[in-house]
Structures are given as structure tokens and as C-alpha cells.
Length: 146
Image (cartoon, rainbow, N blue to C red):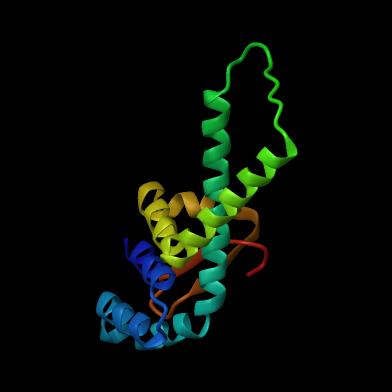
């Protein structure tokens, strides 16, 4: 629960001071050195969390699409080049709007809270990074050596 809460703080807080304050409230005064270590590695931890969560989201979407696709026959859809271009522009605009609203970080937090910390760790157990804090609290995040 503490690791999930700390990950949420690292994902949501843009300001280093605000993140440090929330981590201090969460972990207490005795964890000041650990919080300093988290803040020093904040960027790497945040990138690793986002990478792991995006992989997890892609796995879930693939599973959902597999489940919704019929097991019989195939389907062919014919679209014109102009329809493809319009569709591409609409998707691009939707991504821009989502990014402007800061939706990406809150989507990551929603995914983290719905699936739990273990799901993030299971995304790439073989390539996980570990940050061990002074009191034995471990942060393990799957990623490419991050």
C-alpha cells in the first residue's frame, strides 16, 4: 500500500517540493533519507513506472480485443486514403487534448490502483530495477534497465 501510494505521488506530482512533502507525510519523518533517495531517482522511477504501466495497458487492450473478436471467419474493411487521413488526424487531436488535460498521469494512476502494484512488477520481472530504502522498503519497477 505504501509503495503504491508512493508510486502515485511520483506519477502525479509535477513539483519536486510537492512530491517530497507528500512522501514525507506518507512515510514519516524517519524516512527523510529514503525520501531524498526517491527524489534523486524520481525521473528514472517515473519513466520506469510509465513504461511498465503502458506495457500493462497494451497487454490488457490486446486481451480485450482478442476476447471481442469472433473465432470464426475474417472481415475485410475497405477505406479510402482520405478516410484514413481523417481518422489519423482525429486520433492525433484526441491525444493532444488528452495530454493537455494531464489525463495521461491520472490514467496511469487509475490503472495502477485498479490492477495493483504486483501487476506492475509482473510486467517484466526479469528486467526489473530495484531501489531499496534504508528501512528495507523496496521499490521494484519493470523496465529496460531503468
